[in-house]
Image 1 (cartoon, rainbow, N blue to C red):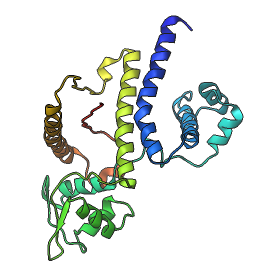
Image 2 (image 1 turned 120 degrees about the vertical axis):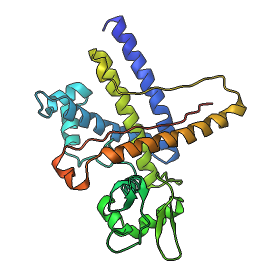
Image 3 (image 1 turned 90 degrees about the horizontal axis):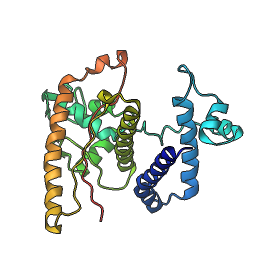
Image 4 (image 1 turned 180 degrees about the horizontal axis):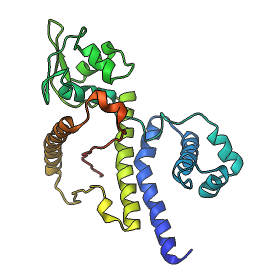
Length: 274
């Protein structure tokens, strides 16, 4: 290995450690230890090598996965026989509450106009129950209503009518929805960064995805909270603008099955490290 490749490898390993640091901190806080993480990491290495490094579109064979990952063929074969890791992989979706809220604002069965959610009864035709059944999978409508009310996203009148008062749901306690949002945010940011790294390596810069940041190490303490408020207000405004655009341009529900699915979007975040 020449010195340039050696320096690049070292830089990549150091970057990996830096990326993992907040994740490992969170896992330890949640009671996940090294052995659990090691088992997940090994299985994801095998999954990625199998799915993304085949020849002419075919899945990678056991021998090639063993070469790519440094594991034994026996270990690779064992891990490939284990049930799918779908609940742990970056394919995990964001909280279904946000999907329900989005279509409450843009499916004409549930909104007055684009971006203007209709007041819904809990049950019956064109109701909250139908909305949840349509876009929330097998989630119980009653439980979804309770969760959205607790988060202050919807209000319920004395007559039982439901009003959406906010467009986005962000869980405020450590539960499965909160974990789903973390996985969705971190995996999509990581996908964008790694996509851009591949594009830069190939020289096809026109395929770069937008990813920028503004930051400083010299902001006075009195201004940190002000910056956070600015990002929160302007960030929400920008995301609502994007959500409006998506709502106008996306396919209606009855055309979903006849078109390829792809997740596209944008994320905005504030960061602070002391």
